Length: 213
Image (cartoon, rainbow, N blue to C red):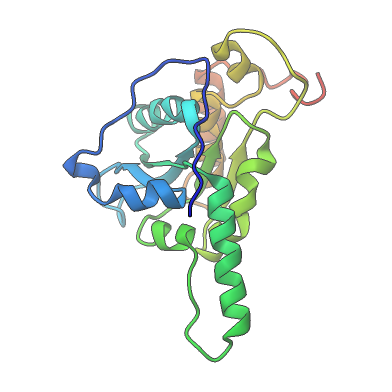
């Protein structure tokens, strides 16, 4: 018998329905990850990144995808990570099976299966500490991808969610910069393009790291 839980947050926002465009997403919702929005474009010809969001910050991820496209010509696929914990459990189960069946064909984790055919580095953003999304790093690497995680490491604070996300450097602008930096590290763009984004969005490069302030 399976157990399910509901997380309640103090932020109201509309949830997309299971339209025909996302047919089959039910399995991904239960397994912890599904493709919410395909960025379109030609995967082999355009710069592309994979953006993951968990919970209410998903709206910032969607906004970041729009900015990447309009401001820098980068295509972004958007993924809803319903449970990094579940993705970790799935990965461990696959690891165990591969360990105990060394002569059989290697199985892949749900993360690897989903990322197959979707090019570019992966950037995950949450309203939690970075180690929450970092649980799946080895499975993203197994899929041959660079993995960048944004999270709210630091001291507890009380403020508007928008201000907190800016303070902890997890809002749409930091997601865009993280995506561009990952592309630059992979040799897809020049580092100057990252600096251009930092200047465009007026990010303070001299401020203290949020986990020290």
